[in-house]
Image 1: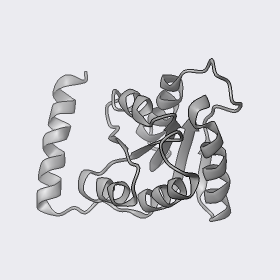
Image 2: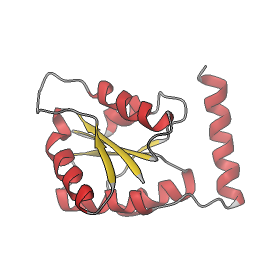
Image 3: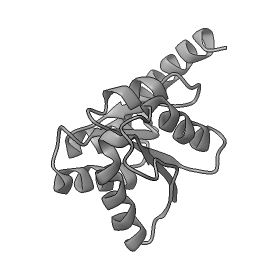
Length: 151
């Protein structure tokens, strides 16, 4: 599985730790920035990089980290084909993929500890969309909103 990861300055330290951790586990994980902890960088730039990587098909999933997780989630969800969720617990991380086919995990470095962030990312990366009729029906409705509103 190819995974894109990025952060602004508010998530830089966690991104570095997650990147190394998942590379050591054998994941194909690509760092799309930030490459230095710069307080002047902007989270939408990194959300765009991950969204583009996932949309263009080269990456199965993405991980975005900022201070709260909220900013990168809002920005990533503006891209057609992206379903980004802020998850600060392992249940939401795997359930969002299994039921909602989420393809971008968003977390806040200022919200949770690094051990939990690693566990959340692992739950997200190992989860697979459950194609049960009820989940697919709901996802199809969400996709119809996207197709109607994002031209």
